[in-house]
Length: 237
Image (cartoon, rainbow, N blue to C red; front, side):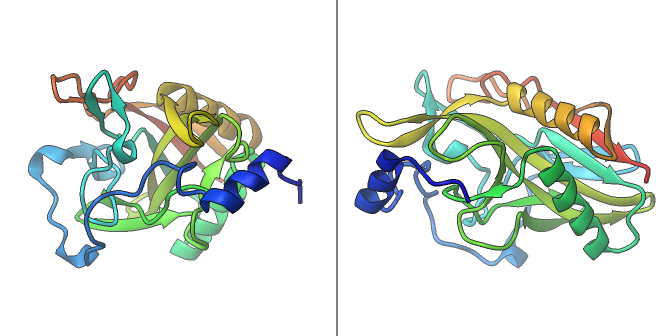
């Protein structure tokens, strides 16, 4: 395992990483069975997939807001921007195994020091995040103490043509001063890089985009450079 730089070890030791990862979401953890999605937060009728929740959901069953990040005084909402359809998997376990293997091959293996416990809504229910095992894990292409592309997948949800995952991915920068923390960089950069890496190195290929219309630009909220679209990746074998 690659050693962390000396200053990263000091940061973790002194601060328990609480200042490095984005701050925890407010509100207590709630029973997912109690979740009722707002009609306005659903995009209905994605071909071969069905209905998809537009936003990543927190432990407190709220729409994720990049953990309190503010851009120009506006709350930064965290959109679903990836859809994965696995037409070859026969069981949920196989679908999950194939996804994890593909993420590793794409250079997005699970890495620690991230927030966790998120969910995504697909066809009437919440699905917990992948990677699922281990506190503080997310799919990422670099260590937490560097700028990195990272995110979570939600599923697998059974559909007629196989199994579906949705995902929320973004790029974050690491800032050491005035206090160690992660700051938002981009949604589009990570969506495109993940699609490129999966297409080049795995059986999951870019098949186009689905306009989920989850772009926000109001006086109170924003999705920054997100264009409202999710990249669609499909595995045939």
